Image (cartoon, rainbow, N blue to C red; front, side, top):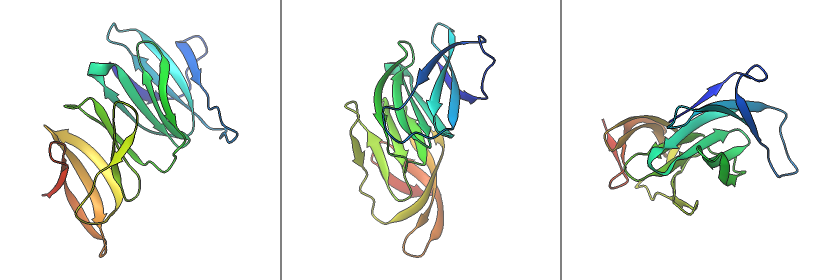
Length: 168
């Protein structure tokens, strides 16, 4: 299963589906994502907003798409939207491989999106700012941020088993 941002495809190149917003405010910018299902079927979704991140929870066939206009969670096989959040403050997005959930971050918080699409924010021991996610090393997500109040740059890991930040 794959989900990757692409440039606007040639008309007819892929089967396409538009995921528009049911809101008054709509940007004029669009993002295209090419999906590949477990069966190898490719199709393209069109989403409002500038592209930011994608994440896939393979065991539950869900994909999360983060654009400047919002966060979408959909079933990649059925091509249906499960959830949409107009929250455009999110900057980072990743899957939690061992838990089949998604993790998000805005400027100063990290949260977990549960199976009911509710966000529970992690209670950290200190303030953070400018969070950036990296790659996983087993159950640990590489994370960079500025530790408050001194804005010390920290390179470390977020342990997704106990939700503690470990520095390198």
